[in-house]
Length: 215
Image 1 (tube, rainbow, N blue to C red):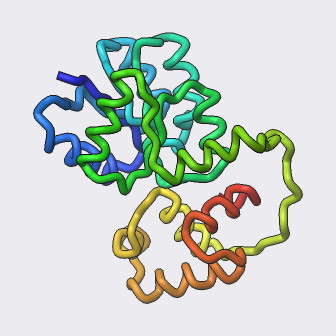
Image 2 (cartoon, rainbow, N blue to C red; image 1 turned 30 degrees about the horizontal axis):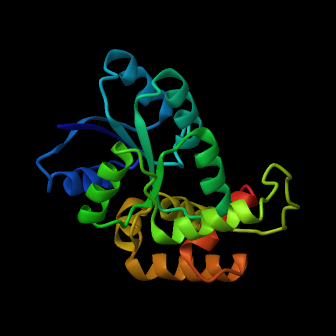
């Protein structure tokens, strides 16, 4: 049996990943954690683990920092970043921290299983779009540590709340339930967010908001 830990601050997404693993008899989820600190605490008690599926954006300690610590303390444990973000900086920092693979959360159960097995056999699994970005990064290294000038972007409190929910990978109907809004109102907020940030999709909006310290 392949012993796996799922680390994600979104319980709904934790369960979604666990459900994908349940399709395969050779994979078992030993436990879960909602941030890097909880993961390290649980590893202290049980580090007989083969692989960690690690989210990136989490409170208290994010997945990239946790990856670096896990790799230094428990080098036998493989780590696959499992995230909605495919931006260059996250890829670069994840690889630098020691991640063994990088998959997006919409990966199919079959591809997730294949990625896990490839990683355990010494490979480096990556979603095709991530692999392409990684090649480009190595060909044209970017100095991510140089801060960029922030733009003067003004979002309302409600728009920031909606954006924070989006950044956790939630669907519009989940956001509507969480914030006690109608689905139409959520869509309108998202429309306004895109216009103010001058972006065209969710990933661009989340990244730009993070760059400007809005979320």
